[in-house]
Length: 218
Image (tube, rainbow, N blue to C red; front, side, top):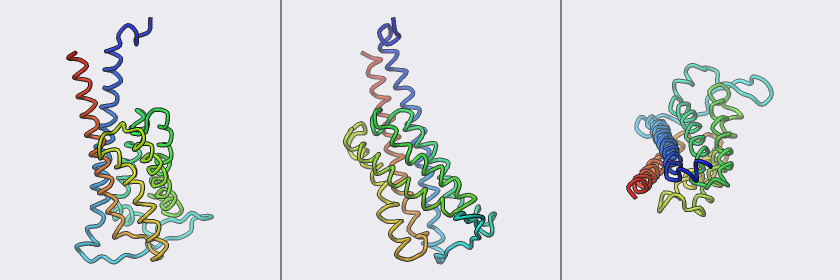
């Protein structure tokens, strides 16, 4: 006899426990990543920092590296930290098939690959920065569409993946090509969308926890 038939409530509890843990992990990672990215705008918004392309040199092929690696690492700490946190968060949602539903969870692999590309930005901003942004944006747009259709996340929460995905495609990429410079003074606003996504995942964990407690009481 399978554990599902012998202990149906226990199996549900174990499944929900995994969901709660992964949703909480995703929520915390997204929110911290959002705060880190948002903080990158402070020098531009309050201290008059001027938007400028970082100085880079060609390493080989189409791969470029920042001239002063240590300075670039410190200056972009918020983006670098968020790359790792977003990867952990995307993987956490992929493990439990939320908010897409289990059958569509593999579409989360697109933003996962995008986050991996962003990690390579630590060493090689080009071409990994634009590739990572596009993959993250397109991937989360697809995830956001399935999120709205699946209605696993209730209310306004199911729209937050789409909002996060639209920002790089609708705002970041067009401004980059119109102005010819990365929108360093606008890009930090992505942190707001990322924070909302994290808050949604955290609230969803509370809903699942409530459902688990209800089952245990019945």
